[in-house]
Image (cartoon, rainbow, N blue to C red; front, side):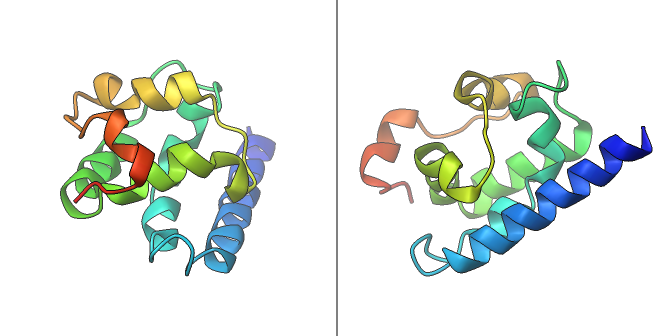
Length: 111
């Protein structure tokens, strides 16, 4: 159990580091995306349900920076993590959070 916590911490640090390097390309989304670290277990397939902190963060991001969700969907591998895109797309429904349609991510023009 301690090893799993350690690995989650390492992945979070990696995501933060990579996001910081891509901050200009991601229009300031690095800290926003890092705040979704409670969702990693769910979107990587390690947990069958998202945690309460994950859903809370997702809700906050949808209200304040929904365009950052497009950055994650369009470039998850860019951030140095492998996410299950099917699970990532199911996260809003699992959290009961209404998000803009994924189709709006094609041009990253969600406002």
